[in-house]
Image (cartoon, rainbow, N blue to C red; front, side):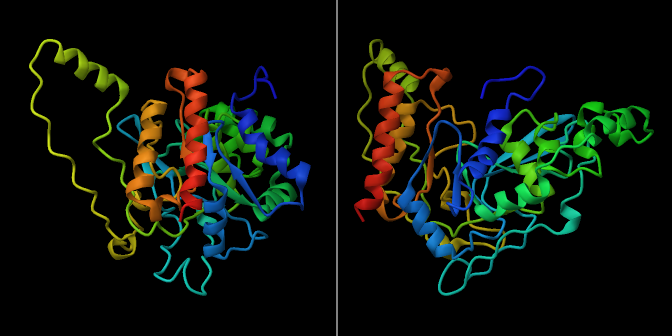
Length: 348
């Protein structure tokens, strides 16, 4: 689908799950949605879904790599990764384990109202939760069916709201570009994703699901923390170190780093949710990660050796091309990382 004049550049992203659902409706249970540089470990996904005991007929979105954006001092302040959707109650200690199924995150009516902050509706003062496209999200057939049956419509109200907004004395409707989002009489998927609510597809889809009453259900945490090794340097750092050696006498080699301490996620879990190091989605990456593909690959390689029990449960990985360059080296790293995720699970 090409970029179309006058329509959001994220149109291809937001329409992908809708078109996929219509193409294979009834012949799938769960849909894996990510960016074009997202990798999923299918065995880890299946193991996680089996542990959560969720019904694919319920409207569910699963992720523990979320972004919370709030507007303060005339600036956007995104925070990530956020491992749990705080709009829903914290899961109890038995959620996701034993015979009890995970409770889906369904939002109460007061959490599904139209945004009132016109200046930046996708980042209001009270905060807005969205999933991170690079880490991906898993959607149930029930969610896509709900959108198809009740929210996939577009009316003339989108145009009518623009005219009403211009004549309104309500300061929250003073930006006509957001009228289709804040209009109270249209909470449809199309009204949200085809408006100027956000330039990012993952943020727009998260808003559309929120308007449908669906939050993000967190998976059970990893068995223990899976931290990104700090000893791994970027290629730029390594090159800089090599150039300095030409001018300076090399210092004595530091002692080898001690093995990382394995902290049980279950023991350190608080009422607000497990630490971010216990997440399954994008476990070894950052939001808008600036690391080179080789460094991201090195992180996963080190984790697979040092923490195999946790690594085999990693659901997704994000390998961003540095400066947008997709060359043979990047594709080779992508292939190796995909192989590593599969081998990490198979080698248990």
